Image 1: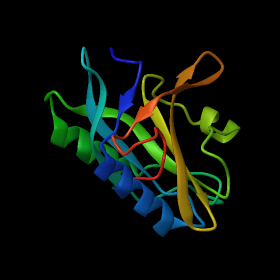
Image 2: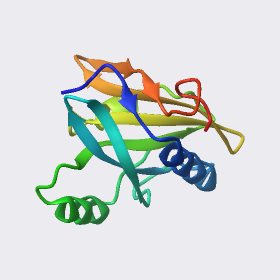
Image 3: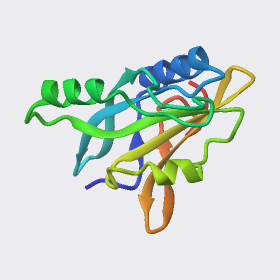
Length: 150
């Protein structure tokens, strides 16, 4: 299981940034599809989801179960699988919140968080649940500085 770096192609990161800006001031969300093998953790695409969280969607997200199950069905037993989720933090940093920690249902999944300030996506950072919190995973988007805008 590759863990040193998460490889996220710049076009996929751009797609996520666009979704984060379009959803502002609410959180956007979706799933990360890819491979976790000897070559490392590699995102191949992002699958957008409506944010179906109840309550204040400026501070919480919930991926639509139909989107998740349809995606799982479509992936079948192929080499690609759901390896994580992404969501935005409107007017907050790209660090996991306490609410994020309370929402960990798949401890092996990567969490990609995009900070959005005043409607503009900025820093993206990747994390994995670990112990009683999250640990950051270096992000390589092939767009220059890790975690930067594409």
